[in-house]
Amino acid sequence: MSNYVVAPMVIALFTAILTLVVRSQPRLQRSVSLLGGLGYATAVGYLVYLVFTGPILTYQLSNWAAPYGIVLVADKLAGFMLAMGAIVMVAALAFSVRYIDEFGQQVSYHPLFHFMLVGITGSFLTGDIFNLFVWFEVMLMPSYVFVVFYSGAKHTRAALQYTVLNLIGSAVMLLAIGGIYATTGTLNMADLTIRLANPEAFGIAVEPVVGLAALLFSVFALKAGIVPFHFWVPAAYEAAPAPISAMLSGVTKKVGIYAIVRLLFTVFGAAQLDLGPFGEGSMLLFFGPIMLVMAIASMLIGGYAAVGQSNVDRLLAYSSISQVGFILLPLGIVATIPLSGGTLGTITIGETIYSIPIGISTSQLHVLGIVATLLYSLNHAVAKSLLFLVSGTIYESVGSIDIGKLGGLARTRPFLSGAFLLGGLSLVGIPPLLGFFGKLTVFNTASAAVVAGQDVGTIGVVAALLGAVFTIAYISKAWTDAFWGAPSPEVERATRPTALIAIVVVVALLLVVLGAGLDPIYEGADSAATAALDRQSYVEAVALSDAGVKP
Image 1 (tube, rainbow, N blue to C red):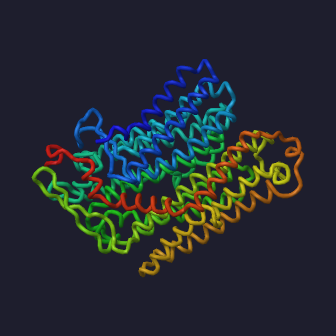
Image 2: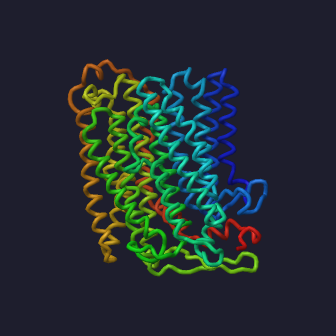
Image 3: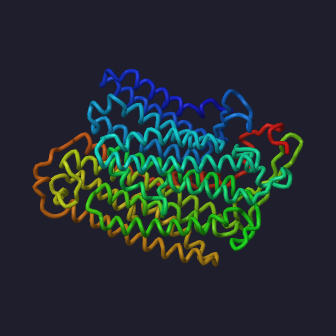
């Protein structure tokens, strides 16, 4: 057990409380918030170093052994997601200090920002499903306030829709969690993996778990804004302050993706059963076609809608719907393909030996699919957060993000325009930017499925090509209409927010650096993908109590 696992959460929580205590001193509050954010990023960096150079780290709250107690698990998958979130957080927080008005920062902004960070961190580290629900709620409650932050009519409308849909999702999630506990007798992810892999030993009927897992998946899809659970995205992203839109699209959306990978591939994928028309084997076979259809629908519907937008934020919001389709597509492809050559491991708990499918195929296709999801998630996190920060800078400078009023920005604000161009090109997938390698890995996953004789690979290639065409179309539209041509009257009168421009330029350069230094990032994504499928190591790290696991 390592106490360091809780360090990022403790720092974020302490910072949230301290910024609330010193709110009467605005300058001190901003300093505390920035220092806390840097401290959080440092703690995450060291934790990531520990898990990528050593074993899986766990922390059992109050020293209660799993599955009775609450356990936090830091493996390579959690570490990769934490690092992604920390990158976006630092940029968004630095931007916030110069972008949000002093009154807004003083009253609630900084405490809420760090409380949201606590929920995000807990979601990535939790080792049981009920506390995943708890951390989701901790993450979501501040976001409700952020969507209505400016208190206008459209902000209230967006917040109401966002809140109601997420409250319904939370109720569905709680219902599914109760059903899983009633069916399996546990909510600890490691314990649940053991029980689903050995249903006879525990007297469990696996079939009802499929439906309950489907309910959970629908909630995760709602959090990630995947079609058909995407209706809240455009209004919420447009209503929230620019740095919060960067966090919502860059980080909180990825919490839903992480939950899909962790629960479907690590936990529920251990169950082996006859799924009728879906085939016989891992429970993943049931979710594969569903994810594939939802991914394709997201790419095409989001991309088509983005092309027709006349507002920068709404264009970026619909783009996020489309881009999450690229993130989900490789998961849908590999989940549809039965594992070939997966090995069967054993776990000894007390005096009992349990079998467990390790989950790694000899072709490594499933690992490749998760690698593609992680790389594209990182690209989307950095590029889309950059674009939302650019949008905020444009609003601060010009006073409008109506595309029709923004012509000629490239002439008057070349650095700001260059930052937008780099972010857009990364979404399109132009080398040597990070997005090129992310999109290449998505296509590589689909191509590998084709080579393996799977029709789903051909479907994936065609869908990805169509999605890429839409990406080119809406990025080209935004660039030519808002940045190219003669400066509009609004652009001619624009101010020059130097500090905000400097921040977005740094984030834009980060896309180049991440692309140029891809090797360690790819190795990290590959290790994280392997960790997601290595159920044996995950269960062994949690060190389940013999008394808690006995049938």
